[in-house]
Image (cartoon, rainbow, N blue to C red; front, side, top):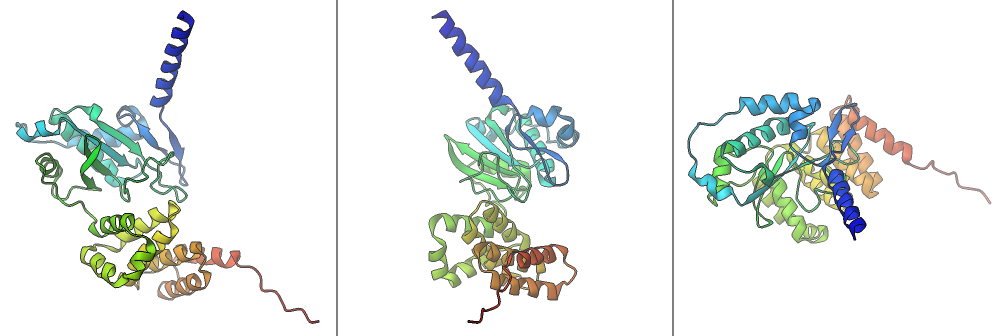
Length: 304
């Protein structure tokens, strides 16, 4: 019995150690970054991240007064998705933690997950931690009560950080940034690509009403593409192409999606269109050359 108990204790201790171990990766530029769930001490103590985390944490300040609404946040958990490679994460994650601390809230209620910046796993976690969470930009702060989402802050506050958190505490959250991307993510959870295409004009004009800059939907399309949701990616790229039809990067993204879907003819036409607009565009040129190299050599007909 004693041996069994000791074995169980050792197994639990081993499992705990594994759970606490951080995971890192090296990106295409040779930079080392966190990926997957991690504890906040990694940002505070690891020299790779401490320089920006501690500096921003120390510089961000609040008025020293009692915010009575903070009591409404004591049962709230916040899932924080970030990239240690991302400028907005480096600004807003330390600032958020500082606000949380100054409101006297428990850090144990903050859950940190770092995502990749690589082309192959763009804004994904090593074990799919982002799946089903509608993450397309980082940082994303998801506020939960009893396991259910009640609000989120996407990339940066809609007003200022304290105001946004206060509104969430009072049950009056602002709409998160990037309304067009959020609209399309929600739409594609409710409807298939075929259903959206059947009423394309309706959804096109609704998306247009919410639209900001060209990068908003391009980023969403890339997230879908690298999550192997290729048909959804192409749909998003197509919307964006009609909104920004003279931007070579938008055209190139649409062409890249079509190429991965197997429509190489239309992809080539779009690459050529993008290069007429910007003949020096290295990214589009690279994708176009890669597509042409993949095409089979034409075979000459045999004479009988």
